[in-house]
Every structure is written in structure tokens, then in C-alpha cells.
Length: 236
Image 1 (tube, rainbow, N blue to C red):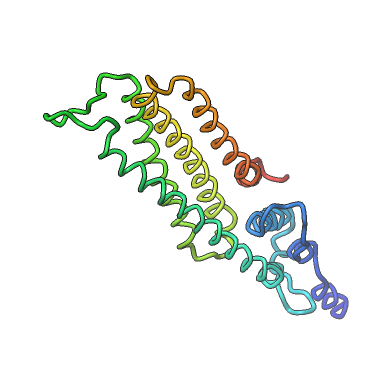
Image 2 (cartoon, rainbow, N blue to C red; image 1 turned 90 degrees about the horizontal axis):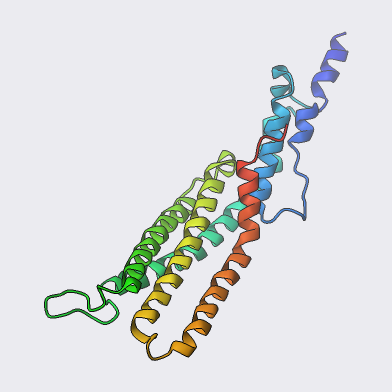
């Protein structure tokens, strides 16, 4: 009986199997794949008996140790992928902050001798100021989200919620800041040049819309995938 018990202890249980890494080509990015692996492991863990969670296999390893060893390369790849993505987005956010902050103090049309903006009475000026401020605040929020990604300790658990949450919020606020910046630019064009370039105003607006659509198309699939994986209901 003792030999049978020893054999049972040394065999892999279902949680050991769930902890082993299975590569997939259908998941966008190693960070997202690491999140899926964690979700799967925790889903299986919630259904097995607590004694199986600490059971050791023939290599004298618990399921969690098997998971950590099997996914250590994926964690490194996910860290590198997150940092590369975050660094690129930080550059974009910083450029937007620099532009919209400078524009706020060099208003289109300039100021009167009393310091009052020349186009203060125009509706397009109010639109310009509102969306320029929104672009500044949203790009600043995006910068903070991606700085949180860069400064993360990159433990396994960080890939479950902390990093995906920062990734989603960072991209959403970055996309929103780009939209606001384009709207502010359109309002500035309307204030200063619409009376001269009325025939060209519609094509300029169309190009601005195409720019936003192109940026959204490049980022949207990954953003949707990360959002779905992070905020959808549990697997079981």
C-alpha cells in the first residue's frame, strides 16, 4: 500500500498538466499569452481538491513550481514585449503633450494688447481650447499608464491584471488624445484659414479623419483582444 501511495504522489496530476506551457500562434503577443496561461491555470486550480495544489510529481515539484519553470521564458518575452510597446507609446504621448502644451500658449490669431485671445468670441476657438486641454490631460494619463508598465516588477501575477489594465487604459487614453489633437487642429484651421481656403477645408478634415482611422486600425485589434481577455467573465 505504501508503494502504491508513493507512486500516486510521484505522478503528475491535472494541475501539473495545466501548468505546462503550450505555445499558440493565435494569440497576439507573449504578454497576452502569459495572461491566458495564468487564467487557465487558475481556472483549473479552482476546481481541483486543495491537496492536489501542493502535491509533488516525480521531479519533486508542486503544480505552481511546474508552472513557474515552464513559463519563465514566456515571462521574459512578455516583459520585453511590454517594455518595447510601452516605450513606443511613451514617445507618442510625450510628443502629443509637448505639442498641445505649446499650442495652449501660442493661440491661433494671437492676443490683443490686453492679453485677450483674438478669436475668443468664435465658437471654433472654444472647441479648440476644450479639445486641446482634453488632449493634454488624456496624453498625460496615457504617459503615466505606460510608465507604470515600464516600472513594473514583472512577476507572474502582474500579467494577470496590473499590466493588462495599464495597457488597456494607456492605449485608450492615447487614442483619445490623438482624436482630440486632430479635432483641435481642425478647429484651429477653421478659425484662421476657413475664410480663405473654404474649398480645401473639407479635404483637410477628411485627411484628419483618415489619420485617426489608420491609427485606430493599427491598435484596435490588440486592444480589443487585451480588453476581452482582461474583463470578460471567468473561463468556467
